[in-house]
Length: 123
Image 1 (cartoon, rainbow, N blue to C red):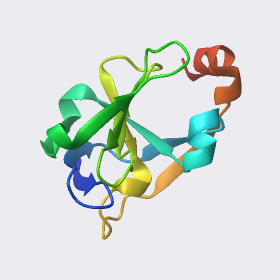
Image 2: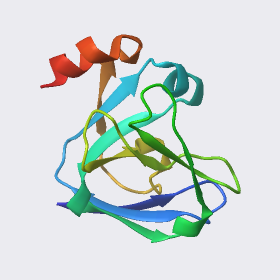
Image 3: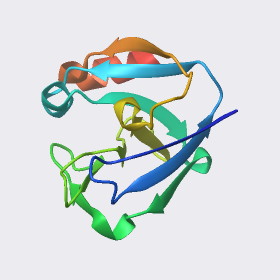
């Protein structure tokens, strides 16, 4: 297991995550991910912890309202959220991890514009 930390741009929100390499990361083309450049690293709920700043998070839901997109209310960065595709897990923005780690992502395209079909292909 690899232990990593990360957070938002201003540092108000911090998290810790541990997972076994390699890190399969999804690059989604849905409306929100394409505009923000989010790289999804799906981790189990037990492997993720908000270390500080839970009170600085604001929630945004759209479409089905299932996914809980969490943004820092101060700087606007979304370091992680509760995804529709993996209930009980967290989607960590790989780009929000602190630098200096050696975990190289294996990036896989995810067709979020056709979410139902793409989710079925994930298994």
